[in-house]
Structures are given as structure tokens and as C-alpha cells.
Amino acid sequence: MKTTKSGSNGLLTYQLSEPLNGTRTAKVDIYCDTANLTIDRLTGGEQVLARGSLQYFEKKGLPTRSLDCKSGQSILTLRGAQPGRPMFRFPWSACNGALDWQIQLNPSVPLDITAHSGGGNIKLQLAEMSLTNLTADTGGGNIDVVLPDIASDLNVAVATGAGTVTVSLPGGIEARIYAASGLGKVVIDPWFSKIVDKTYQSANYDGAAHKVEIKACSGAGSVIVTTHR
Image (cartoon, rainbow, N blue to C red; front, side, top):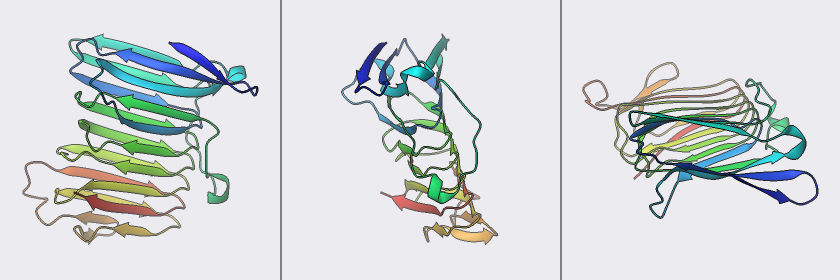
């Protein structure tokens, strides 16, 4: 671990590097206080589970981290100095967090990811990663998720109090989507048909061996589900 200082306002950066240590599967839990959070893949074939930079203010103290490894499974937990419960924020007061957390994860390891911010934006670029489960929530920021190109038997739950939720998943994949917004619009790719109120499904979902379940919600912003190829 290394810490660097940025300017004279007490803004510091925690340099994260966690060893792979024979990890075959991993659970990654991230609670970044009110920071903006970006997660994407490691490049270059580094033999680490995670690398990143976590900003924090000196007066609030260091983020905390723990890594438990047993029988090929690792549990990595990262937590800001003052974690809090999700809270609703009105759109005009919920556009950004004060800090930035940028984390890169090993794409060769199947991951169960939990990502929480009290009010910042969450951006998850997971297109070339291996994912088994995803939960993401923020008190008021936007959530932007790109799911893996190969996604099967995957559960995804994303929610924000006031921002926009955007989920992009591979074209042609069988999925069921529950999408709800209190005040905003709901826009779903036409590949999925509405089957009941707030629920959409691909034509061959029921008989598919591999499926994706998505729950996407916003209290005041829009919910958008698109496909990519």
C-alpha cells in the first residue's frame, strides 16, 4: 500500500494492489462512502486480483481493506472511512461525488461484485470480465453498467435514489428484466417484450439453459436497458 498527496486540501490517494494468491473465484465488496466509483478490467496480464487508486480526505482517515483467501476463493472488502446507508437524494443535488475510486479487477477470475456509493456515480465496465453476480447501488448518482459478452446464469441488481440507471447487455442473450422508476422514463431494448407490468423478457427465456436476471430501479431518474454486440 502507498499513499500519495494531491494539492493542499488534504486530498490523498490510497494506492491499492492485492495479490492473486491462487484465487480461482472472488467476492469483491466495495463501499466507497460518497465517492464516484469506476470498475474495469486489469490489462497486461498482471498476477494480481485487484489494483486501483482510492481518494480520501486526510481528516477522515484511510479507507480500510481486508482480503481473506481460502481454498481458492478470495473475499476482498474495501470500505471508505465513513460508510453510510443509501439515502434518497433529489436529482438537482445528486450529480456527483467529491472523490474518485478507480479499481481494476482480474478478468480471468469469476467475480461476485457488490458496489455501493452513498451518492456518487458508479460506472462498471465489465464487458471482458467473468461475472457470477452483481449488486450496485448509490444514494443519488448515476449507474452505468456494461455486462460481459458471455453472460449466463447471472443475477444483476442495480438501484439509485435519483440518478439514471443504464444497463447494456450482450445482444441475443436470454434475459428477464424488472425495470422501475418513480419519476423518470423506462426505456427497454425492443429485443425484450413486456410480459407484465415493469417486467420484460426475451422470447426464448423460459426454455433457455442459461439466463440473465436483471433488476434495475431508480427513485427519480430514468432506467435504460440496451444491448451490445
